Image (cartoon, rainbow, N blue to C red):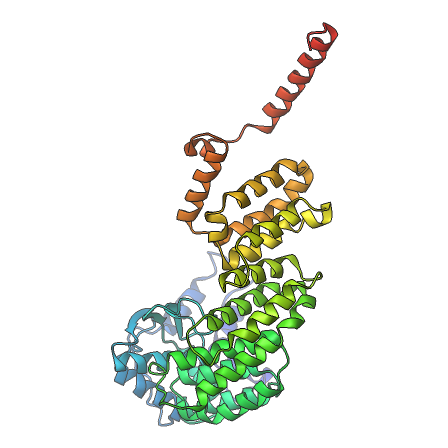
Length: 452
């Protein structure tokens, strides 16, 4: 039966599956049950090993896998087991930790499943850049080796593979997308590929001069400025071209400011971050960042009647911070929204979002703005207030918990109550409706008896 099954299936000889199917056909008649499964149970026992064997040595080695294992051995990473392990790296204090961070960055680029950064500076999203330590979790498995073999077509070592893959990606980026190119240049430095980053420099410089998109230019500026600030960590030598390129990115981004009044609303959040970056550099003591042109463009934007409310809030807060406009103008513009036409009143929350993104103290210490917001809440019809609540809540997410407590104390003072009373649970809506009904009934009764 085994031989016939093998011939039927086109096999040279029968294997374990043919043996199991033959036993089932030959020894079990009818339906398989507890009474007839003894032959299959015995066959399973005979096919099961009773000792630990060894795997034959594989004389074929993939260079990129060997390079990875050697670098892990040098860094004392535990890849002999498949469990997850943690590494905390002191980036600025220890050169060995910087090299290990470069290895993790390189592996995260080639094999994303091997290592994951849990905390530390996020160079891609530009968050937590003040942190000096990185925490990585890594886990080795057969999949790691398989993915490395897939990347072996790019090169025989991790550095070669990452370099070739990065250069291939750069070829697919349009030659005017300077933001994406600058991010790739930064990634090369994070992986310890300084020579590759130097070759990418000319491409970034060329793209920067062709780029006409404000957000892309701000992305370039952010990446290049970080590279300049953290040159020691990234292993860079002093290069006079880099500060010049940063200044050029700044000037190009400032020149595009007047286009923002007609920007897509979906881009407003990213535009706000770009404006904050430009204002921070303009207000810095570094003379290469010209503040006069920036101030002039801010004034042009604020004079544009079509400027969206959210961007108006950002611009007036920035201009006030630079000393070009009095802080009272923030309140006056807010009043124009709050006491304006219904359509303009609905834009108040967006205006406040823009102001709070740059200048939270404009609300923390200005009683007049608090009073105006209280007037808005009191005047809004219930349906419109409910519709505006999400945007208002979003505006106040810019404040820290301590600042929220300070605001609640000022609100309590406005209504002449204790601050803890604001934490009391709200009245049930059914009770409120019942009370309103009773109040109306009593009012009608008083009118009937001429008591009002």
